Length: 572
Image (cartoon, rainbow, N blue to C red):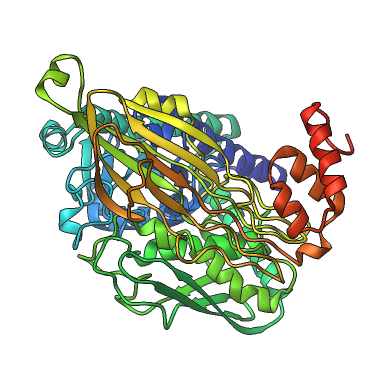
């Protein structure tokens, strides 16, 4: 049966509709997931693929580390399952870091979509789960075998029948079995929502398959992306970034080359594998390097297989950005989230004045593993719990715009509300507020980091898995801008903590953190005095910074602070 030819208008409407379909798919996952990392932080992705496993559309909700890695993942599913073993009603699953999204804590679920008994495409989604067993969410492991339960690409369900033995295996190997199994069912359900909306769309448009729409989407996306590349100055430039690492600093290096029809990022010279779990599989390096380039040169072109294809990524095997199995990779985001700033350090030399300054980079995450402090406390209701908190430092200043406060770039993952974290377990967040003077000074100021103080409820003790960077190597300023403030962490009683790793916290003691600020862009002397006054009134900068960094005189500082105390903003 031949399919009626669709008009260009119908195909464009169908493309927009497909993006709406996958966004509803993602929102279904947000509404039904058990883990707070999905419900509150949006650490997920959703997408639709043609029968050749090429990504056609991704949801707006989600993170590029997931969806850009997932762009390659579905092809692995088809290869490993085998085309002859794909049946209607199947559901596939994996958390393979090298075929999924880079570490065991992300579960990817893929569902084939059939119409009238014929395969027409696939839906895929990924979510970060709170626990996958092993050492927990920490960088302490020395191999992936220690980091949790490894799920190879396999069937969660075949022809509509769930593999109950697999579910029992999952439950027996994790600390939060109800939460994990609930998340897997939520992933499967959101794919089903996508499938049903796709069938409605195909009924409405009279489509028997996705062939015409796929050709239209991929063809136009490729042509549009190549047109943007053609506008770029041709040549090569190098960029670099230094990070704290685990026990010693690590260096990211990249050589970016703009060709006639592609952009190559070569990470030759980057530090080798680390003995702890901060290594990055290449699939995750590709995800964030491609995202960085696309944001810079083609942000308005929808993300799909064709719009990503002209961006090529190379790295030496067993460098920290091309970790091979069985390297430990649990905290791959700590390095991975800094890849865009490294790429921009190179691209700035080819496109001067167009790139943002570096920001805090990696999410400022920590996980609390709580337990009763004593048998008496257990009898009084103290319980075990795993509470994962997603937080952000500041993003870097942009040409013409200040950096965004407590906003995660490049991940886009949201900061969790205090209420959600405290509801998830016996945790108290005593302080959570902007960190004045943390944004790097400049003509455009870096985004602010934040202060946080956390502890356990009475009757509980806990271990804290810390995932912080930029303690010793804060975000460097761009074009004469100042560095962002460094990360700080310690105990309220004066004790010290490391920036990474699982560490025991004494009973009754709180942890005090200050997350990094984004770097400034341009010289601070060039900042608009009205912007300085507004920053002072809002508490983004101190009176000392207003005077010593931006040159505001004492009389003006006093006037601004008096207006702020009266509830007025300067210039309002």
